[in-house]
Length: 109
Image (cartoon, rainbow, N blue to C red; front, side, top):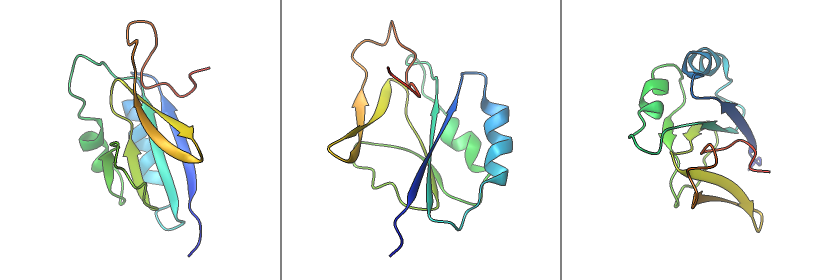
């Protein structure tokens, strides 16, 4: 089985329209795993995956701690979480200090 390529896509809070346009153009048969990181309010439930699902042939879903990250899927990192690489695995981590950092963040450094 061919190994998947992981592609990170970052957007600010106002990036919804740009994400919709981009998702329409993403190839859905190359075994890519698409991961969307957009600044989201930790005070509200996000509908981002639902809003984006109408703009792609691929499944769009919220990532969770048990996520397998399947090829030809799009994953949205939920509010108040970051996705990090730890011991060669992608791990969804809860942000412990949401007041001082935009979360999720495309680059926490």
